[in-house]
Image (tube, rainbow, N blue to C red):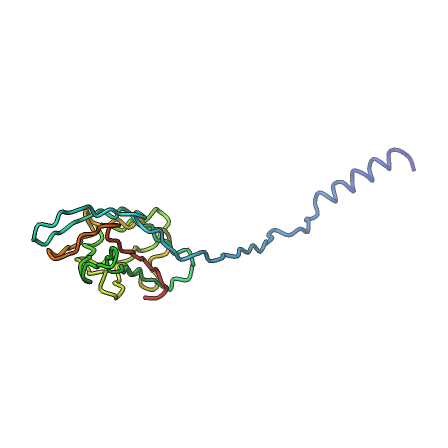
Amino acid sequence: MNKKWKVVLLTGLSSLCLGLPVSAATTGTTNATVTVLGGSLGLTSPNPTVNIGSIALDGTTKNLTANLGTMAVQDLTGSGSGWNVTVSATQFTADTHTIPKNSLSLKGIDSVTSDGTASTAPSAVSGALTIDSGTAQKILTATQGTGMGKYNVNFVKDALQLTVPADTYASTNSPYSSTITYTIVTGP
């Protein structure tokens, strides 16, 4: 074949190829998945140790108060089941003596704030609750679909109030003490 025919043939084939429609896909898909695992339901108590103070017996009933600080609550379960926080306290004892039950109260919660990762905040009780009665008292409630994420719970100023009757025995070997327990459980 001579060179002239080769050039014409190649030129013709090139023109033919450029003029033909190209058969190619115009869309494509990728399936992406993610597994979301639930975390924990929990709380961090406010101040681990609270000193309510000291008194000198003088024949009158005394009221002492103390600040609790901030409690952290988290629902990272991803279930939306809701939850409750309760608080209870043991009776104050020293040596073989006790301060009567129903002497310790929790005045309430000042605010519940999200750390920015939360859904609708839980509801807090208002008003004082007796917490050393032997029955746990509900202080926070997250209904179904609320309370997911992390929250800071700020108690009111002087949240703890202890009433010490005039006829209380003096504590000689150790101070009167009580254990305050905070519990978080699933459910409205």
